[in-house]
Length: 492
Image (cartoon, rainbow, N blue to C red):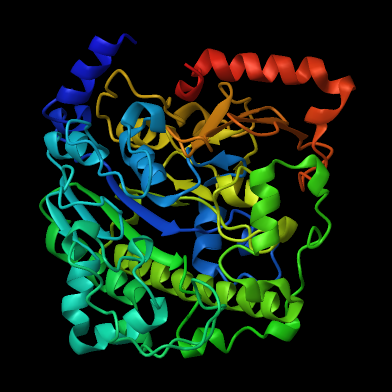
């Protein structure tokens, strides 16, 4: 698509006034999009994880189609979420980092659904960075939660320990242009790093952000589902930091029972990019994580966060059943990126290893999806917008980077439509790009060592083949395909 055509598309977000189904007198499908933050794709019960307590997410997987090779477009919150709601890769939507506001002129799924007569709601985190609503009619976020908490907001400020807009405090950095208003008011806990390793939360379970999001999402369904088709995004913070689940959920997991990843302490650092070596050496968010016992504590509290998240998701799904909406509602579960959780000695996200760039992705479509179906072909979250519009009978606008996944929902065993990509740190000297095609993954770094992995024979991504002469042809082929998709602006 030419730049002019793309700009015209972004400015108009063309969509018909009404979905096709509505013109026949039949109410169109609703959409409930359950979105989490930093949920690694393997940490679900349906994936065989012995620690993950995810019965409600597992139920979705059993009654829908799960995509076991789904990828985010950028392994960090804001750019990834912009892709999820616009259907565009980062270099097209231009939300470069967690500090970049989403461009006003780029239309989101909310614009398309609203123009088709839907009630659109966003309840929870989306990381817009500024005060734009990006097409949503109804929006509640961190700031509304802080109003609900009142003086108890200090408990959350204490848990964060510092300004952290990724966790919603502040939600909009510009509001704190006079400095951190919590400076000197927090009760410090002696942590050595930027985040606490993990402990039970001092916030009552009812008052956690996830509990708030589920209550308000249920309220939205009860208020707006009777007279309108709806597009509702219930967006949670967990299992993202702080790794401080409610006391009941923290008690479900013991550090002593956790097992360190098979790749812990085994990274061949001579065959890894300098950036990854540095992340391993610095132990990610805290130097305390160099020790195995402390690492196990962090792992345990991560699973506590997941257990609470799953229960809260279950409450919204319960409301859907109570209102007799299940047969009319497309349900989607995904996350904005993953979490390394000690794999290769790494924590958080920011890299292209599958635990970081991979995401859980489940669609349950009444009357279409075969129960318990699994699609193993690589797919991108850029397909989410096109898929949801297509499922609801709304014309998919031109210019999106992702194709509808309808054919794969109907036939999960079919091959994928082509390579998928991811990007990170665009417009910086640390820019890097990923292409996954079939079992092969190639990572290009603008100023660092490349990576090539064969996930069929090396699912843990332990052997970087890019340095071996026998794979030079594969490296050249994957690099050419990556550059044909998008030549890094940093090289121009």
